[in-house]
Length: 259
Image 1 (cartoon, one colour):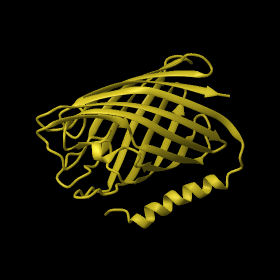
Image 2 (cartoon, rainbow, N blue to C red):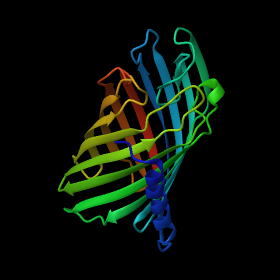
Image 3 (spheres, helix red, strand yellow):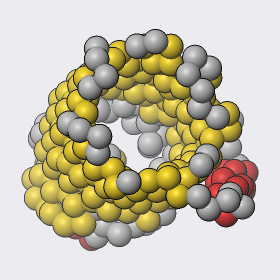
């Protein structure tokens, strides 16, 4: 049974309200960027290639996290493929088109429901809003606002961490297209080989965004390394498990903590 729109907006508004009532005690700013490449046919006769370059800033305060992501996007594929998530559109599926420009901006606010303590469960509630800053006339976005609410449990003991996400996304409908609101979840495990180096594995699932569509399923393996006390490097490889996902993807991300 779909979550009513008013309830989803209420949950997001509650998260934003909790952020506004938190005592301002800034801990740190983090800036990050990287490059993500994916390729796949998504069940079509023409492959879709997507380059995604995010520029993100994150502010962590006490039990709150605020994050803003502004990306650049370049894609080449069938005319009916839209945006970084390669959602179905109304263009010509047999004609290749190539576009590049600004992607959709994402604003996220997270609230810790359970404080982080080693060896105990950590729980975080996050509200997200996707702002339509991508040019919908060029197929770089849908031109509509999306909302999402998710909960993220995390449990770490010694060198091993278990984490997950359970979320619900309400998608805006552009003209002539009806998108479904979707449930999504992920399961992951991380292992720290040393204080500087670790690796992990993540399984992602999302319901199909359109009636008759194929649900995306993906498996991602990653390696992260602390370069120093301020900089961190992340590299990853993605393998699609269904025609709703890219066949493969890879990426690199660098983050810098400003004390």
